[in-house]
Amino acid sequence: MSTPGTALPDWARAFGEPLCEATIRRLPSDFCVTENLAIEFSGDGEHDYLWIEKTGANTQWVARQLARHAMARNSDVGFAGQKDRHAVTQQWFSVPRKGEGTDWGAFACEGVEILEVTRHQRKLRRGAHKSNSFRIAMRAESTLFDVQALERRLKEISRSGVPNYFGPQRFGNNASNLYLAGQLFSGKRLHRDKRSIAISAARSYLFNEILNARVRDQTWNRILPGELANLDGSGSVFQVDDPDEELERRCEEMDIHPTATMFGLQSEKPPGAMSPGVVAQIELDATNACSDLKVGLERLGVTPSHRALRLRAQHLSWHFEEDALWLDFTLTKGAFATSVLREIAEI
Image (cartoon, rainbow, N blue to C red; front, side, top):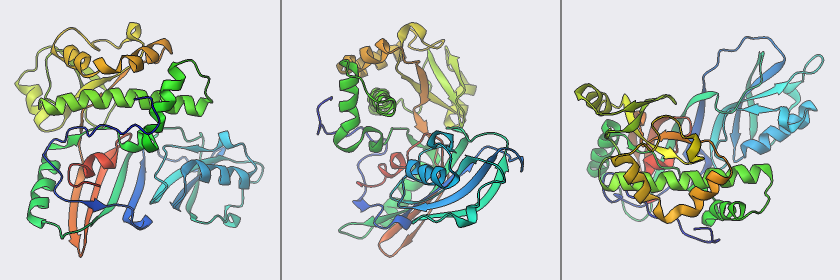
């Protein structure tokens, strides 16, 4: 798992085998992402807020170009989340104002367009957005789409959600981020950014292994006794000792979701995490082969948390156009569009 070039497992799918082979991102405009921010702007204050459309550009790179134009430090530029590079994406950035302010009309950068400028009193922080909206073209590879089969699958996804896997980009090319985790846990000092990437990859891998087990035993969309349930669209969790009819109904309607542990320091587990019982045994069995990752996270004192096992594709709609299936949907922050796509096609 910590060796360069290691292939990721083919984690279980909820609805059976992919219905076709498809390509995404053939063109940047085939993959569009719009950030939905959870902030009301004050219209004044010490920070310029820029609504930016970028094409084929990395979020961190755009932030550095904005800092350079405003003669600010890179760390002073704020953004809510990293957005795909090989895509057309719209998101907010904040830049501190100096003196009379920055002439954003003079900003010029290939692949980057400022659509709107406003002001706010505080820097934009990571995770300040509530969701991301996607418009994605899945293009047929070798044969035409089976429209009827795809529509049945899409209706099932709309009704039932999908397993909330971390996408392959979390683990890097050829699982390189897991290799970083192995180096970190072996005692190698890493730059702060690489350290964060390594820890995130390790926790995500453990979560995916647990979710894989829950998909295989068909409990990824059910509340089991003794686990923490997540309130849809939020980070809020609560202990469920014995699910009753009301909780089962809420789970069926995707108002609440089962969760799995995002591993860290066991002595500082949140209340109810890994409590004795069936859920704890599932998580233990699913991660037995990954003890090096669990021990490494515990030694670093990483704070544990929980993540929903199920992901709701909000406002899911679709249409067919020649060789393309176009999808529109919205996901909560931290979710991966590839978790939806892999339930439809082999990408």
